[in-house]
Length: 473
Ligand SMILES: Nc1ncnc2c1ncn2[C@@H]1O[C@H](COP(=O)(O)OP(=O)(O)O[C@H]2O[C@H](CO)[C@@H](O)[C@H](O)[C@H]2O)[C@@H](O)[C@H]1O
Image (tube, rainbow, N blue to C red; front, side):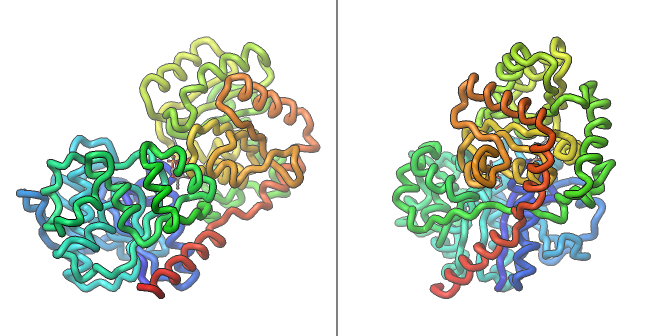
């Protein structure tokens, strides 16, 4: 079975968040199940690309409206990721360092999708399933079904995974001419809310869509940035599969980014050693419980609530904890968090993206706070569990599906329901109190580190889904 994953991100080639982690890991685990899972992504001028070997496997040209563009499909030659990796290079369009935020982003991603399909058709590349991830690749299910140019792919299975339905890739109708000739009667399959909506189009045209947790599948029917009715209509095609984690990359006993590796039996001493080193670097007291937040500083993650929360808990529980933030995102939130540094001594933040620092923090912190408004799955809590760091989460989406409050049978985390200041203060106070009971903490460490959130189970669910769809294709 040949499955071609199309994605804007894939760790370690290029990652901006959880999408990269998933696309860098799932194919590896599918390979273990006998699936030939491959990844094709845009070319980025990045370290991984310059440090690894690639060869050109196809050169072609295509049209984006009146503009003709040349493209080059590059294949990584040493199988360093454990699966086939292809990059699409397009001069002046897909040859830049950053993944997102260019003003011609829609042109970039449309050209990417067109180039991939041209290459597959021209080389007759065996593909049984096109597995598309998020809106950047959302036009593929439509294009293979309704564009004459890709007619030979019309019966191919397409699966679409929603990592985040907040962003939908909206395009004005004036950009319709970027697409090759389509069946005019099917134009409506591109539309939602008076514009071309790649995410909505994918949901309408794919054979099945998946969400990255079962709870998120349900939530989308009620909160999905105006797609609620569509999710209600198409619900028979939807399936919720909880993300897994790559336990080779995220392994505290071998993680090369840590100064002190540890297992279930050595966590007590070595977590503390990592913590002492980290706290020294950030001017924090390693004897206090260290609470962290790692992630995009956006409202979706509840990051806009952090400043008020940290101020309030500092007033109430002065000197009883330390707080360290790693993140980047909205400028206003970044500035607020930097300002806190000027008057709180038990607090620090690093504004920016730093993969190595994130590993060090997972290994050093006692608690990780995730006050998300929306969390399709969330990987941070899964990494945290593997590193013996207790998650404090709002009960939503994948957080609800993966964290059980420690006061319940078999529980290991701290949960709260609402993004209300006092509820969050209470959750942090429960953490501070729990830290004083080191016997309980030891028990929780062992329990958390013994949990299996690896991709093994979830990759099998994707495999079953592919098999079912191929059977009816
Ligand atoms: N400043 C920083 N420096 C270093 N590392 C940083 C960082 N900011 C974030 N990260 C890392 O990026 C990843 C974020 O993963 P999430 O699952 O929380 O994120 P995201 O919202 O991007 O993904 C979306 O897709 C994923 C995958 O499906 C879903 O789990 C999620 O709910 C959904 O919103 C983690 O590996 C984290 O450590």
